[in-house]
Length: 69
Image (cartoon, rainbow, N blue to C red; front, side):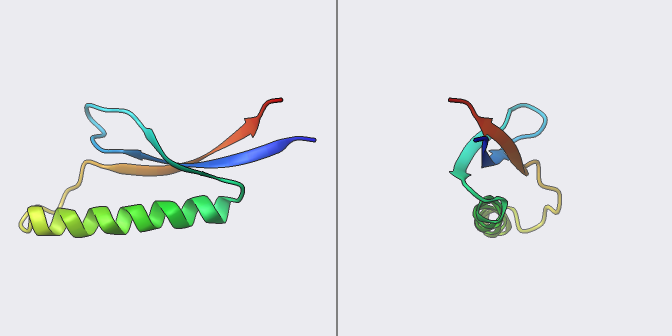
């Protein structure tokens, strides 16, 4: 039986960094919810720190991975 895991990932600086794992889920919806929560918290922090800047340099994605036995 093939097991698929969904990985919520975050890249803090798209020009100089790479993606890291936020969390791993059994459903895409769970991963997307975790990603959206993290994104909302990040936007809130961004607005408090940089109130005059509009462009962010972050990225979020959900990747699908097959669990190997």
